[in-house]
Image (cartoon, rainbow, N blue to C red; front, side, top):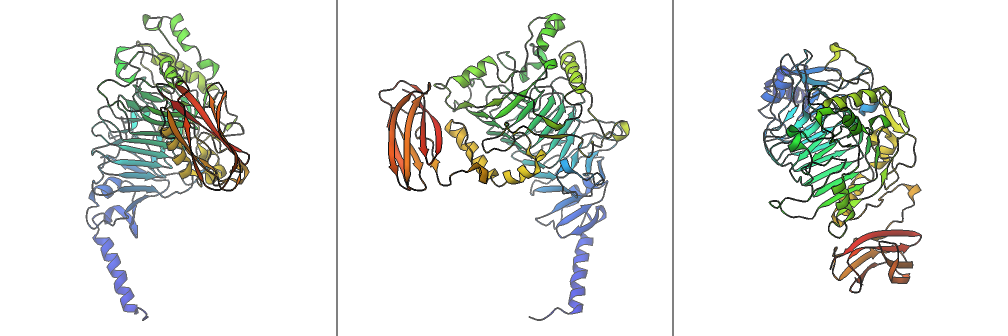
Length: 577
């Protein structure tokens, strides 16, 4: 192969330089690194707005670490391409370099800042603040302008809001994916309902998927589903601490919802009484809202199977936050004694539905851990700030008062740092409890506080979600899928959910053995009494399909267990005559 001449190389270099110079955003970019445009501070709006000609498919807008990207106007991203904005810093935010803070995207002057997704949008390694250094505070940062768009936040910090960080009121079909992110000080408006992550008042959302993210100090309702049956809700391995309002605001109409391996500490604490202006965002039977809320579907909605999986979550409330309803009664707040605590996992209607396996076989409630983890360094979150949280929870429900949850700041304190987040993140929410684990033995809550465990978990991430969705659709608790050697999981041994389920009167139980050995298959009723033995003897390496006939049994919940090579797998099935 002939070598390129020096002249040819020079010409090629000039062509590349000329192409860069001819870019409509050259004046707003420090340099181009292939498809990546390194955006100059102050010029993010221009880079997004004017990048219209010969834009490479892999365009990334790279923001410089430690810089402030102020927005005097809010850009709308293009509908014909995926916009990607990435901060120069690459380390996980909980282990951030003190000298290399994530770039901050915020407002400027009288504009509070924000980005309007007109197409799919991804942000990574950045700080998101809907406020300006001059003190202007916005209602939201992301305002969707087109339907069926996706937003992804990864390894981001978001702080401050009068309402929520992400809003999609104007359009339907929005998909929200959040992972490895940190939300803090979500407050700023004198309204008990405001101060959270997501809302869509007027349209149905497609997907909300939140994993390995931490939420610390929030004023209002965190994730608002309202009266819309969202297609898929996935909340797995997240941490919530000192979030005063309802975590999951919903009228109870969800039909595909997974809440697993999360930590809820001192959250969902505002006491409840009926107030007219709150009605669209509270329980329609005027019951208090717990962490999980489910209701029957209105007659004008499709009467689909209600599938909700709740397992291996932790709840804890400081004693100072309990019995706030009694305080409100004793002090005749709002001139009523009809006050109720919302420091509950479920209200009475929701709990009854989960317990009624005959009518609601796909509402599955598993383990709740009820203890305070031994956090490594929560600073004053669990001590003096609990008093602040209590005062706010009481006063925000008093209709004669207008209050805002005070900021929780330890590093950058004062108005000079209004748009800068505490950096590095000043807490450590890892913990030493070895009994608070998911089905695969990993710590629950945000795994980013456990870097080694997180790295291991990523190897089974896809398998875990496959199992969670399968358990959701089959109406059962999830099982471990782990690959870690200490779990000693027998590869190739698999037990499928019976089909059909519910059934009448017969159903098929399928399982796979990886090698020869003794196998036992038994069926039990809800009291643990053995109903029948379907198989008890030597098996060979193959897939078995056994028919179970419940003709002589009453309707109800039954369990079948397959035991092989020291492993036992149990699944639930429902006989419905």
